[in-house]
Image (tube, rainbow, N blue to C red; front, top):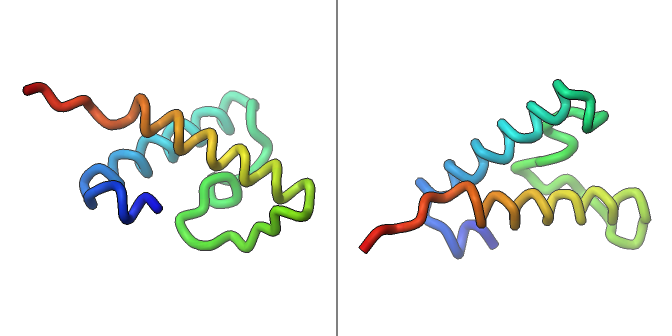
Amino acid sequence: MLNTLLNPTERRMIYKAITTSVEASIANGLLQSTVTQIFSLENPGWNPNIPKHMARLKQYQSLVVYKLKHGVPKAIN
């Protein structure tokens, strides 16, 4: 979906912002996993019918929505 909505520059900004945020959360002990497990750029194979996978999917969605709101600078007319 991000490939459709955003141009390559905006996608890179979002990916970089999310990766930086996840790395900081791991370093602070707020998250207990690797960046790839939390924010995978490839299909992670999560099954939404499995509660643990659904929790990861929700976390992924929250990261994307937050960084879409705060990670891309607003255009000035």
